[in-house]
Length: 246
Picture (cartoon, rainbow, N blue to C red):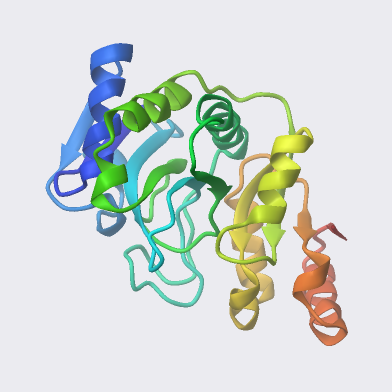
């Protein structure tokens, strides 16, 4: 496992400090934020397929206090780094382990704990997992929160779970988070319902192929009308990908 963070990222620096100090994990600081730094594996000499963790700050218009986990990649835009229509590999089982740990260690804190939908770079050929603190300077620099997130990362492992990509829901994926926490299911790349227009057979294949061990797709039933559901079915059938509505 490699850990990289941006020099201008307070939360990333906070979490990385405790990973290095308390858990003897080697960390690397990048001059620019990792979302704009494609192929971060080259900066840290990561082995092929080695997991890269990016601790980072999460920004929210409403300053929601949050602890989030998500994949790296883009659909048809790349406003926040990476490449259009390309995603980094994602170790969904490891990411679920982080989510479970955060839920355990932050249970008495007033934070929203959630998956986020896939929405930004960097592009990488190595598996990338973002772990973020949101959403203001107060939370970014909170030492207790930085420690518990670092501990959650350090103690995670590829716990046995079925793996599915997700389609639907809001940017904060409450439905898929609930499934991951309540069942032995890990969620990989997620396309929120707002990405419906960007979904093509090629985009669905990219999500599936870049989610390690994916078995198919879970589609949030209430996110789409009947026409949209039929469209998703046709696209998934056209590339022989399995799915079920939840």
